[in-house]
Length: 360
Image (cartoon, rainbow, N blue to C red; front, side, top):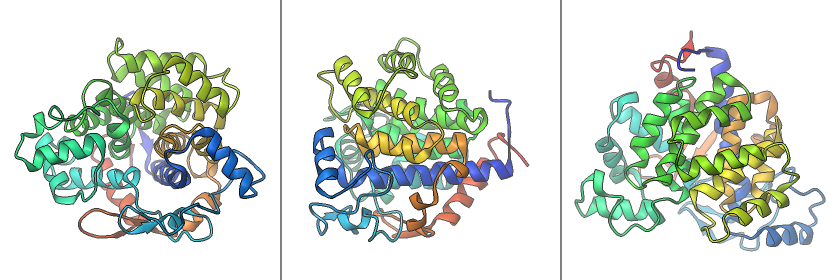
């Protein structure tokens, strides 16, 4: 697969779809992050939503004025009051991967480069990221930052940070997985690291394979075959064509992993796969099904939207999912508070041209 290439025009189209698909999935899930499946269904009914899973963004929030990620309120994520891609960690870390590569050694950045960027940029962190950042600030070396006071090292945090590495290494899943591993090692271990490597490889593969199930299957080559994540992914792929709807997907996953945290890497990876199975080539259906499955729904929807975008391009993402963003993406990190989407995409492209996967 590493010898495959994509044309520059196709890469640009798929990159935009992957980035906007990620942003749309995150933004759709953000107002209901942490909600149960039943609570979402009830709220959709109470607010007069006729089609569920949703076919557009939420129009209401129980707490519209409540702050979120420093510079937003919950109204920032609603259909009629959205003015950009709002701030979120699922978006922030996607930007941060770009900064790490730009300020490090490009595609060959080091763990020390990751640590420098974390100290420089991150203003808010949770779970594994918070533990690692605190350790870095105490002077603990980057290679040990994940190992002290961190019970979250197999949670989903590392794999929500990996998409940018695939964007910068299209059709080069080995390099994408290597970069994702370097990034993940600062805060995660075992399946937490493998999740990041897996999804980076899958998105990279998507640029060339143009088929989600093929990319999901091929991505298994880039993580240990005997790890628990690989076992779960193989199980989800075995059920890819028989999962009936979002409720069935959640039931299957909860039956297999009844005592697993709702923000663990493994169960959410399976839900991401089921969302892609249900949505097929319609990126909007992919993200809406992912959100409806609950668990860490903004993360799964963001990852699923990114995979589908890399596979299928802009023709499979309806305009109403990205029109409210304009050309702006917000950031809660130190530095600029807002970037133009077109500039971010051009910066990914500049690095991607050095990865060997684009045929110019």
